[in-house]
Amino acid sequence: MEMNVLKMAAKKDNYERLKLIHQKITSLIKDYKPTCFAIEAPFFGKNVQSMLKLGRAQGVAIAAAMEAQLEVFEYAPKKVKQSITGNGNADKEQVWKMLQQILSLKSTALKYYDASDALAVAVCHHFQEIPSVLKAGKKLKGWEEFIAKNPGKLRM
Image 1 (cartoon, rainbow, N blue to C red):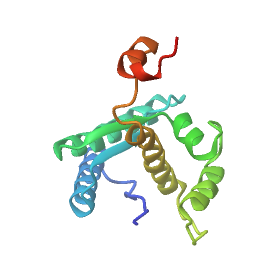
Image 2 (image 1 turned 45 degrees about the horizontal axis):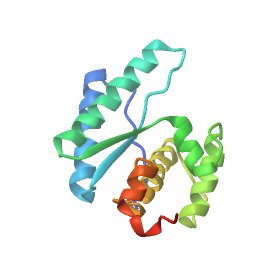
Image 3 (image 1 turned 135 degrees about the vertical axis):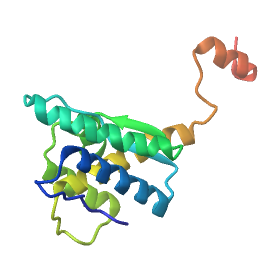
């Protein structure tokens, strides 16, 4: 497992940064051959410039995934926290501690919480996929459909 962050020099041009993000995502996809791509949805903050930069970075990452023919899944920050800790308002440290327990991670050292945030999105996506795998083809639209598909279970 690789868990890291992409650090960029503050002096780099914004477009150069976007290019580096695209290259890194493309490289990770090539190296690890994932079957899908999960990303945290943009959150709304007060700093419009920061939101714009984040949105562009997310767009470039999503474009790299789509270029590789990966299905993209997006999760709200609260959904990620809720699925990992049971609390949609958990802080980054709580999320990291719970990830350590869930994944039996030995190391407690963490240099950047952004890396654990990304891992949390991946685990959240995994948790969302489990029910659909277990219930594949069994979800019914109502009692009428259930009775039609299971006539032997009806007692009068």
